[in-house]
Length: 117
Length: 323
Image 1 (cartoon, rainbow over the protein chains, first blue to last red):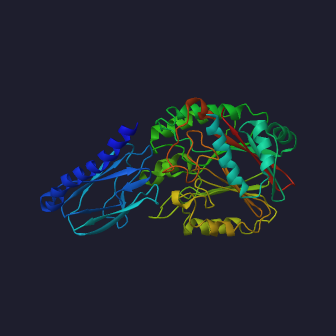
Image 2: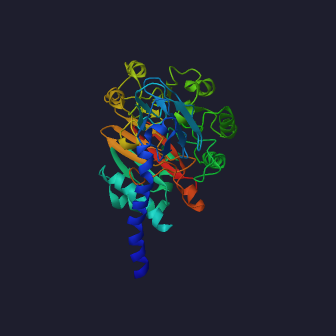
Image 3: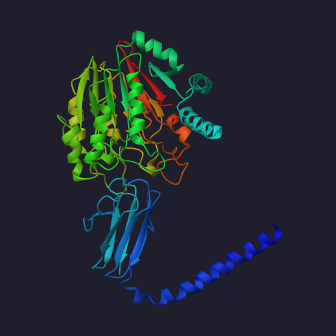
């Protein structure tokens, strides 16, 4: 038990370090990702991450991982998903910079925003 | 499993303790009737009693009774209940087997899972077998997912106003079905909206304060847990219109569990679902369907029997589980 705990304790910071290292290039190579899609997972009646920042031209895809249907609808009427049942998706491509607040029209306590830069 | 049931009971106790209800009396009731639960309202003071005793009394003295069912979610097929049609059927069988026949049934919304015509068809098929032929509906948010509830309104909203609200009188009691699931605002909870509130004020105006009032709507008309949207933003306004009445009973669904609150002459009650349970407020990451062991499912689903006794200004609300 002692040995196992020791290695587990050691492994965690090592894994974090590895992840950090692996993550570094993608942070600096932001320009190359301008067309890369962003994802919002709907889980436990919430949008995750709640705020997503993307460059102009990016496509955001929402996926419903709940057992209950949800929607993603812009409060300003910019975009409106159909009802997404479990595992269903909705995508929207943002062509203009701005902050887009949205919510689930079925469970309006669920809110999120897409920041397009 | 016993622990789970105990947790469930403890949670109910906690909720009820906030209302000054006698804990020992409640425990006795739970022990005697399993998960059956009776509250008789008398002069605003809730009195608990054993299930069978009350049923006897209701049979002899009740002027009439009706049954509330809720949240049948026809079309739902996830692990929390792969066969919601079967459990609705069990609920209807239970109603048909009641010793005192209810005059009618009220369905407090979420008839369907996805507002699909095929789901409404299945619901109709099961409800056709109910001995009580008259059924009143209010929509849940799941019934208005597409086309602003057109499909729902065509089928269940005949003679209603706006998004499906209406009122009727039965043997001296005034019933009002309200809709708080339409045109919901970002960040908010349930909403009745200005037009419906005006209609409600007008509907109640001129009625004698001695008329017993029953309000029913899908989302609770009292704030149970704002973080999960378990409340109605403008319910205070609606409740201000019923303050002058001597007996007001508010029946809701949406939260798939029994919750009760007494406030002056107003008693609030939420019903179990016929489809699947949901967690007690704040006890889970979200309000999503709760999976219980298959043999426990019927113990967390149920129906609500409401008895009216003329002259007592009290409605006896009796919850009973399917199994």
